[in-house]
Length: 261
Image (cartoon, rainbow, N blue to C red; front, side, top):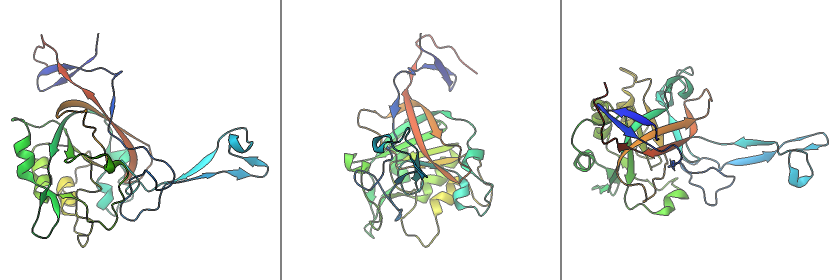
């Protein structure tokens, strides 16, 4: 018998043995890896201490390595409002205290703007969503959904971003977690305004501590638009962001579901 999860007064079944991973793997180097905001590529170094070498392939007893990674530039990452706050105590590990959420997956075609930019527009998101209140999380897939997203080098290319009005609307809808397959919700170079970041976190007026943004995901075409159970997995680093592994589980309403308060 499958476990169930309550949502909007109904009960939904999901299969823990059928995860849908929407994160991008991290590996050393630039080949086959997404990269943005001029971040150095992921680097993996073998630890050497005296006669010890941290590589079984090189004769060591164990593999023992140091990893250099920039969360905001090296693949799938989740961030909190500490990203735009001067307070070092505002960390993702402190802000994200729950890890399971009901999520809506939606696919959107970004719209060309007069200045040549491609932007995800609020009106298109609203038109693509089913009627009614949104769940706590929104997973946005941009179209076309090519596999090149998994290894694209975005720095200096002015990649697609979101209209700030979308962030304002998501807050009004009660959305706490926004996941998307772009390097940022904001324009690559916007003179430091970060309008969508500020709007989504209501910073600095009323910071939304529990709200997160997850960027550089990849939602395969086999994942259809609809409702899912979302598990956001992070490391326990006390930083504003962390490499992350968001995982979806298909939700199926239980046929004899009774109202769950």
